[in-house]
Length: 382
Length: 150
Image 1 (cartoon, rainbow over the protein chains, first blue to last red):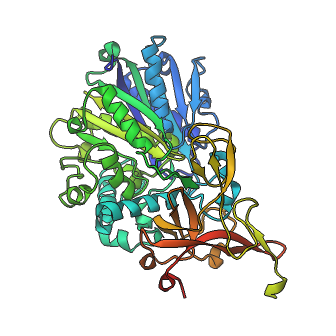
Image 2 (cartoon, each protein chain N blue to C red):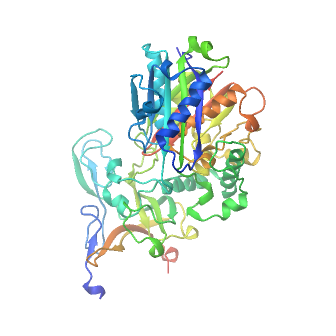
Image 3 (cartoon, rainbow over the protein chains, first blue to last red):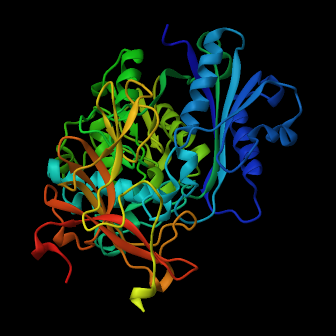
């Protein structure tokens, strides 16, 4: 059984900076919006999974919604936190114990690059002391090598970032809503060659929530259910080129994203050619370029032509990050992947407003990737 | 003054020091022969616990690289920050057919770094500690002198 769980409600607290609004407050707002979208009350929700990096106990949100006593489990899984929450809600419904549950993600990060104690990532202290425990540095190295190996240009990186800012300008919930030209993006300070400041996303604040139910109950709640065909999380295998690696073996293998993507397509029983709308982890413009191939949507190197031809645009053949992605929305870690699901659901329902892709999209795809080599993929269809 | 300053490795057991020909200290699994850096107690592949110390080749080829052009968040970064910050290269150097090691590079100019170029291990100062000692760490520099910063 693959088509046994349906998404019947989505809700979002806008992403950005919100002085005086706590992460928990934003989580409650996202949940209320998802409940309203599904036409259910909080007391109808039978269980929940909540994801966050900064909020120790996302389940504390019940104080703002109602102390109904439901099982509410908190998860943290790096940048794949939201994918983990979504997967756990779906799998719990598949177990048969519950019919209606909610996944919520919320975060409120301080500005600046993410950091931590390297020892918490199984890295030695000196790795951080000498300045190598830096996530952005990994993304710079990965795309720099990829450009060398597969002939991707600096202009392509700028075009991808410009596209995401342009899409963000069409999204009232986005953090960055001002279009930036390719020239401005290329001229911004070089942070980790070849990636400039405006090619990177920023940590920020926001929340998102998704209500799921047994598929056969979906029409009780909505005329437009979106079925969760697969939701998969994978971690890196030995030989994958992943963030926070003081060393790598000589023998190489594909990364966690490739493994998660292949498993998700296999579970869903559909292929990349069937997907109409795509949300990829664009920690930086280079990551979007690489992830397009890692998720099976093109061959390595084809991105140069695809981007030049506008294939990744809202009206293109492979629309990617139609809501502006992480580059325009920023990354509140716990919420980021549910923001992707929110966007895919709106697109599949035809409710994406100014950024609605033309035609009648039937299949959507989301992908997350982050430290220390964790990826999450979900596939949805109407 | 320089003669009075001690040179202190950033951590014990990651490279041989002091010596004119420093080597990185890794480990090798007695069962599957995989090489790690730094040394670790358990093999990440088999996973045996029969890891033995293994000195790594001093030369290799640049496999991937970037420039760290802004001061990383501190902590954990302990090097010069603010106006004292100097951008540095970071890359993976493939050491023979044994292991790829991530390292600071002595070169921070994109025009002077090329994937596949030959690199060699050096030990360089990267900060001064509270006792005014030079804290030294390992780095790789281009073997070809014309590629080194002047």
